[in-house]
Image 1 (cartoon, helix red, strand yellow):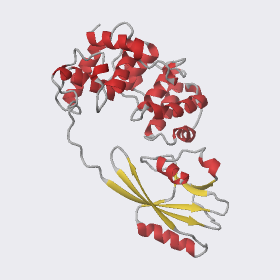
Image 2: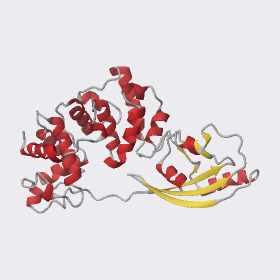
Image 3: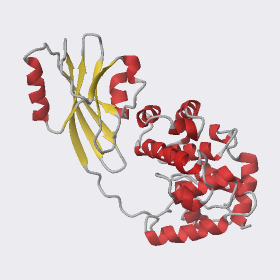
Image 4: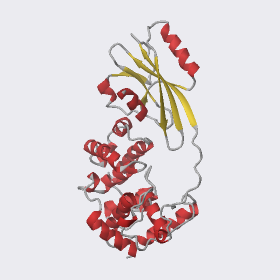
Length: 340
């Protein structure tokens, strides 16, 4: 067992997180769901979503027998909705090919939609207590600083090097404890900014600390400026206080979710409004909203309209009462607007 492994396992015995919802009565299915939810999302944000999800889908069979729309309704507000779609696809695959059980081999785990090398390692280690390395953001940062790796962290050469190091650290015994420990030390102590070196069990051996470089690492390639996309939405409400939503059945970031009617150009929205004015009295007001994704920023121009009636709705549109909206999947900005 390496010195790194020994020290963080010992630290975990006293300080590690042991009572997270997915650690209680743990099994490979719960580990899988939690690991997918924790991708790009903070622990405290995930907890209520995880609890609600597991209550509705306690096992693979319940998940596989559901629908994508229902799964996305339980994912609503968590973001990165391809994760929810991939979980549903994987559940169907697990039902068809593995009799509703999780495989333990890395190769089979990585064959599941949305499960990469590090997630597969976490499921195998935490769920099955079998040797496997992880290399999530916390583990990367910790290893880069501990071994003082100055190359940019996002290059394939550095990633390959880090995988070799990560695999060499995994102990034969207590591999699951080690996996949770490296996650915890990385997230709670070896933080992205302001690392708490004086509390770190690896302080004495950390090469970047010895050279005063711990706050300078990891090195990253310069960020590209994110493109800005602009869309024009309409919030249409009827006399029963119902909201008109359309299902986004095209490929994209919110595929399968319910959102406000959307137009790419302001003139297109105005044409639609003019067509409504022929028959209905409208009350108009504007709202502007920005929403950030990992790869672009969205500038939303919203116009609110109140109509007395509306006939001949397209197949992808429907009226929703306030309670009904909570039962379907909606994007975070839609939820934010409705709360206002």
